[in-house]
Image (cartoon, rainbow, N blue to C red; front, top):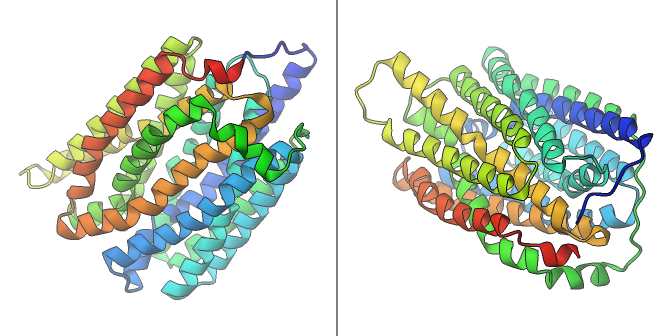
Length: 403
């Protein structure tokens, strides 16, 4: 889809809305990322075994999964600002519920409520794409960087609060940030929807779209590979690297810093589709390098300080995975038909959610065999799927669907 010419009077408002959306996401991640890295450890402290932890994380992913396709449809049919406000409100309520949870079943139920707020994710991508800014790749990269700058310090804050006080305090502070994030969304400009098709009519042509048909399988494999490594990263750092909660939080911050820095660098290099493919290849390469370092470190007779630095380098490189997702969104924004862009983003987000449902139980089973196995499987599968995606972007896949 070619970018539309924007009247000069609309550009300042579009830029303002983008920055406000970035601010909201920054605040949201300042809150939510305080607990994301704590959840596997907190579930373990409450008595859950590795496979049970994987199932609990999968429940949250499943709740998000069932909300994404309807969320994409709503994004095409109803004002997107309204969808975003509804999603943020549900998510904040879920985190407040987590703050009151005192057992594994209660925490899992609150996690499921939080997961249902995922119906706002397609609307977020659709909102950014419809701002019609000159560089969609840069816009998506800026949004990713904003979320990760919020993530950069919040895991350390959450880990400190959980260790110094209690996990409940960390969840309450998280909920407060997410509530403020919701209030910021009231300031963004409205964005009307153009579609009025039925749910079935909205998805029927999309399922025959050559772009999504070609990208679906490699996207699912790439997302699943990344989720394998993400699901038990905090447990790996505790069980194998013998890091405490504060150190685990710092690793999460380094991961977010890597995602933010790499996203901004990649966004600056992607004026042309060929450069988009090159930047995407670089993201997959850096992620794979980070996985390789994590696998190689355990068992090495290294000074504690040097081992911590190398783990930090590995997590910095692994942040490139999130940067790659932003570039894929930019590719979809340039290629999907405008009238079905919401359901297109909904389908892409559904593939990510499917990966987050199927990968954690598999990661738990692999981790029970050996802590390094989830990372080894990810290291094999991710470059293969990433190579296919890079080839598709370089070939300009989706041009037909953009016509």
